[in-house]
Image (cartoon, rainbow, N blue to C red; front, side, top):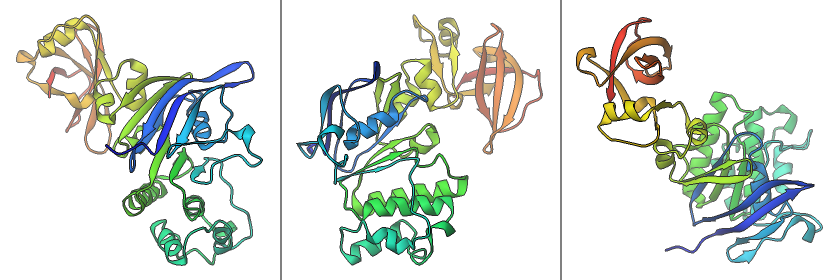
Length: 318
């Protein structure tokens, strides 16, 4: 068992008279990727800043490789030299050449720096001025600037929020390549499940500063503890206990949360649940159908073809 790179021990944060984070504990093992999800105001960014040593704590402590990370009040310039923190509000100085911006932060060899620039896909931008760059280019340069400082841990706060779809895919590929080549330890905050469901090894769910659920993304996706967690991770439906028993044969004392991909249409006469198609939405790889069951409950499922409104359909488990 590898020793944890990062240990967060019961940290909490109070700002003024308001609790922003209630006690949270987590560990990050070497090479592990952690994503943090939650609604706006849930404490995601505060957690990252606390880990980075940029935020004072009410209680608890953060350890990097067994050494305590000092809080903001303990340092003249807050932050830990081995923890890189990329804010969604990052800035690059205007009217500077990219190479100049990077040279100021360089703490690695020339060969190592060149490899970082290649992996970040910015090696062709080194002679450009910073005010001649696109948003995606600026973000990759900001990342490279932190990487040449030789961090152990990289924290990213909404790194894709200001990027279009094309630049987002480029950024994701850069992170994938960096992870493989440099064994970077990542913590990512994002509001979009598409950013981390296929990327993260572990997912932490926050709500109003409290830790709700933590585990493998696939496990949380298919077995969320409540509708809040379910909604953060994507489209879902809720079946009452009777509907779930008809569908699966399993008796529960509580409603069942289910994903569209877990259901499919079937022959009306033999289907455990019956209803009518109310909405058909094209989603690129098929159609997302809204079906109103005989009980009046509306559920969603995927289907390869479009269906006419008010078509009678049967529903079964996939």
